[in-house]
Amino acid sequence: MISIHPQYIVDRTGKTISVVLPVKEFERLMGALEEIDDIKLYDDAKKENEPSIPLDEAFRSIELTRDRQRKAESIKYFNELRDEMSRKGLTQEGLDDILKSDD
Image (cartoon, rainbow, N blue to C red; front, side):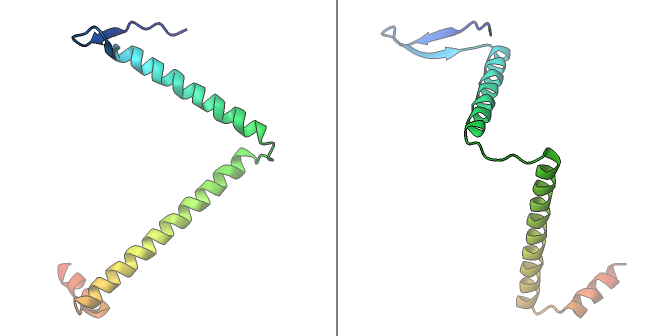
């Protein structure tokens, strides 16, 4: 059980309007709530009776998805750069000349 030591803030009429906790107690309380949430998610997933996949396969799938996202972002960036160069009338050869002159 988490031990907490709340301090209550009351308004002029004596009605409790807030609670103050020491930071360490608040962090322990938040950690416990996250753990409870994880347990609930696990229980909900078990109720669905869907087949599970091995952990290494799940990681491979996640990495594959991330790789695809990175590739899509790179292509988008390249296309935006190409369009900007085109708007400014800069060709690849012109860019190569600029880069060579910086060496």
